Image 1 (cartoon, rainbow, N blue to C red):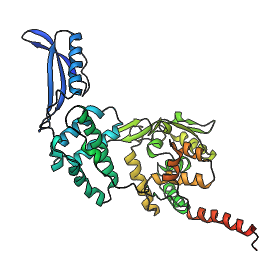
Image 2: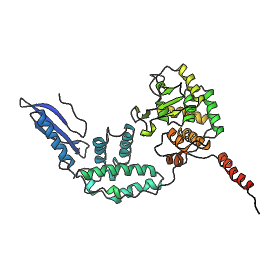
Image 3: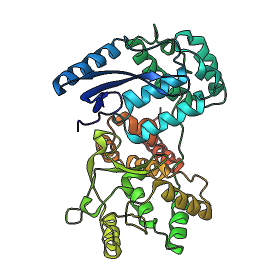
Image 4: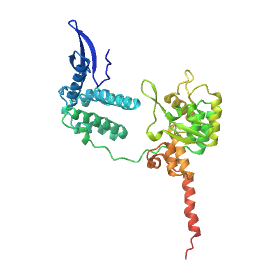
Length: 377
């Protein structure tokens, strides 16, 4: 039986019509007001003929010849665009996030029901304005990104004459949000509480403080990634969660796939963990030895922070803390950037490095020492 093609590619399947076997060629052209898919079909007698007809339908669709534009609403098209042109081409977590944003902000709303051809830049600008006023500028940027991609494709296939989202204005970029680093006292309190509770994420916390790994990178580690002899750690996969399941995928960027050198105490820490481990993964679910759920990990971490009196309970603070500690120790900029898995070293300094008050005081003594050596007349 011919393989059924994925959404957006069309499909070819057999059907008997009046006693004669045919191959049905089908392609989805859109969705109606009730969310039902609109399809264009034809038939062929041979596989070769069917493939040629499918290619013709796809070409016509790409040129906007098969799309009924008068009844396509913004929300309908956004969902259809994501299903047809993005599913399977972007990371599952990104795709899941886009679907959730589109349904939350456009499903059932007045602008979501607006026909594409009647949509204006002002419509979008007015709709997004409350997000700007409430400080949700990051959500505003994500929505514009989705709108831009979807409407650009709509123009390409003839659904609408122009991409009106292209002219929507976003607020000026502000400095990145300052994620506080943990003080030495906070780290000690957090570790003490985790040790007292014999917490299963104690080693993960220490590892994050020693390496700056992202949460998903820590949870994706297997024992094959640890080179005990040479004191190295390979980061090659990432554990993430969509709304429905846990996924193991490649890291955030190509530069995130890396090998880092470990401190001797970190190697010793992992050696002790290996002795008691019963899973392929360093940090696993107790019930099935699969990687620990990121949400479950964060839940445990927040509880430990609360008990330790650490107000900043975001895991990412551990990464910030490690980055800042490396800079304060005078480590080479490129080494720091590569260790964190950054493509651009400027990311390291603009986002992750937050010199402590003690470090500022320490650096100021350099100015004082210089002045003490200067002869004033």
